[in-house]
Amino acid sequence: MGQEATTVVPSFLLTKEDIVAPSHRELGANIGKKVPPKVIMAQIYARKTSPDKGKSHPCHYGYAPLNVITPASTVAAQIVLGTGAAYGFKLLGKKNVAVSFFGDGATSRGCFHEALNFAGVHKLPIVYICQNNFWAESVPLRLQTALTDLSDRAKAYGFPGISIDGNDVMLVLKTCKEAIDKAREGGGPTFIECKTYRWYGHSEIDPADYRSPEEVEYWKKRDPIPAYEKYLLDNELITQEEIDEIQSRIRKEIDEAVEYAENSPFPQPEEALEDLYYEGGENA
Image 1 (tube, one colour):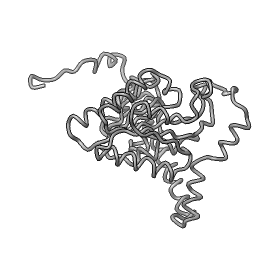
Image 2 (tube, helix red, strand yellow):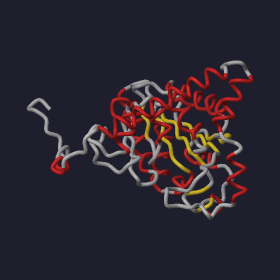
Image 3 (cartoon, one colour):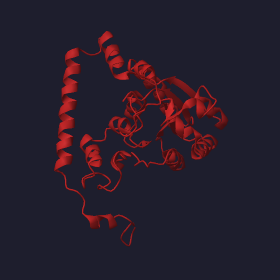
Image 4 (tube, helix red, strand yellow):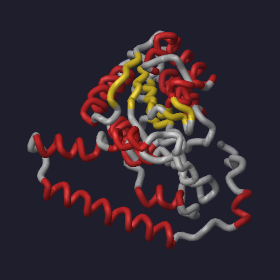
């Protein structure tokens, strides 16, 4: 909560064929890519109807039909996969784009630098989106890097880096659209640093007592969702009645997704031995 604009908005701009390389728990990117909520809920519940057939850790959302790569818990691993997908698009001459999401902590990992360096050399059609929430779990940004703007890292790899307010929906929309369009037309990669904040701890067992209450309250007042609602209302692009109807529809969709997941079967133990190898026919 607090970071929704950084993932929902860029994913919403993508086509079905474009690829998302998400990090662990990247719910917003899946929603933005239009992954059905019941599929996401089945994954959380570890049911057989999940895309991973109930075999993966909860919150590793992935969905092959819409080209959302199933993430791993390994920090920054998805950046390499997204870069590889972008390389594939270029080799095949396709006008598709990959988008990879990651946190500020990932920019200190070796594979992050290797992937971006490769993307710069080959001018790959990929957009790297860093959700800088100023805390890599419990490590503050000032103990990770001496940089003020993480987007400066892109200079080392020969492509543009941009730092923006990641809680400003319209700014995220404009910036990401320009970067995605540029990548699609062969202009190469872009690194976008979205400065944002997570309200709660890194996980359910993290009390986040390494942060001050004042810091958290400051960022809660900058929540992107009510700010965007206000923008729409102020510009007469939506009515309060329409907002209420949307929220009602969303609640209904979530309730249906929970019911679907709870009524879905668990996988059987022997199914753990399935899907380990590709078993194709003689023409495979």
